[in-house]
Image (cartoon, rainbow, N blue to C red; front, side, top):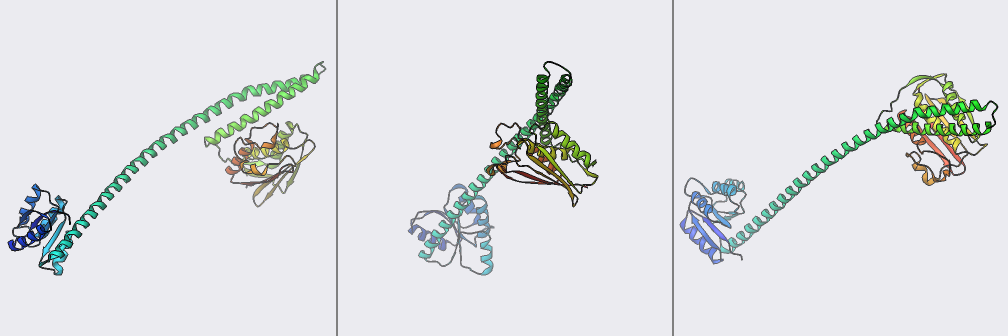
Length: 391
């Protein structure tokens, strides 16, 4: 049995003396005996107690219950009630002060010792629980502060990234636009050289050959800049759906004429136009990007003499395009990366390209709220199917 410093609060001197002897017999130290609540609080203000044995009925203005309430507010000391009464009204008052135990008079020493041990055990466990709760609250508070700080840093980082992306987009747009003018001049000069070479000239074949190379190189570089400009606008969220009425026949001719100019592989485009209306309403620029890029890829990755099918039909308020080639195809393991920026399959060999075309196609299809799918097998070719809602 451990020794405790105990304050006895009892207004009956005989009961107080009997309790003192019982406690001292079990090696406890009696801090004092108070016959009133006021005196008990005075003793506690000057001494540390491990436990208070509190009679409910006391002399003075403060009874045992009110004294216990004050002890609970000001001192971290467990209280054990002593009372000859066990009626419901008294018990209800006692419970409200959260006592450590309740002993009915008269009591025996064995019962008293057991109550004291249980009271101390209960008090220690409550303090341990409170300490754990305090630690948990402190950890939660600390973690909340850490999360707040982390979120604030993340917000700063995102804002910085946004600023960098805006700056990058502006640089890309400005530089790309800057290249457009000299490229146009170079292209015009190359075309003039070809015109001059049509006249009798000793170097006519060489002039024609090199002028053709210059023209094709400029067109390739111009297409690359167009792609870069497109993604510059995409990153700046400046690509918008701008529907206008357009003549379908003229649109198809414009796409095919553009492709035939730069077709070096002698690959033929077989076009099939099915049930097309004369006029539709859609975004002409976005449609052009879709079909020009898909057909350009089919031509680029087909062999000389092969044929590319371009089928365009109107059905259920949708423009449905099918582009089928018999070229090199796309490896199965790489097909899930097909629409990624700058992705080029491993089997393209020395065929030049930026890896941006299909990314542009996918972005345009999304803006038009359409759908794109494909089937492909290496060395057997690729088929793309595009469905675009139109009115």
